[in-house]
Image (cartoon, rainbow, N blue to C red; front, side, top):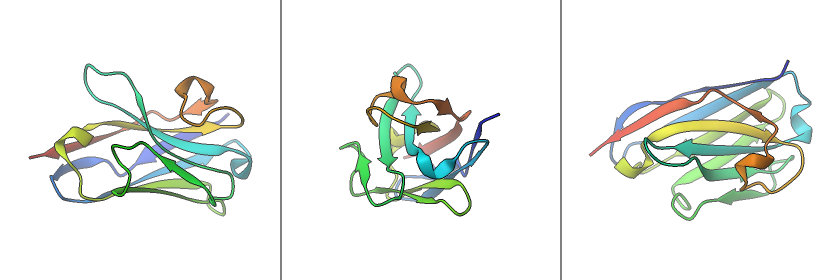
Length: 123
């Protein structure tokens, strides 16, 4: 059974940093791309960042480019999202997902999803 478990969310002030983690089990981690998506209240889920199998290539939404960094450690089956200079508009539930093949920015292409972790940024 595949499990993706996010952690690290919380309530912070604008300008602060957070590091999200997503631990995976039940899949051959190094053969999957990993992505982070987020969903704010009343909005659709949107792509945030993605990383390829080895971690050599990363991709970001324009809204987070330069502030967020995605990384992975295949030795411990974990993907991370370092979020710096957080803004109130970053407030959302953040989800990690695993993709074996397809378009990294399309949520419908992902095979497995975590339950999400809430990030709230106050102004």
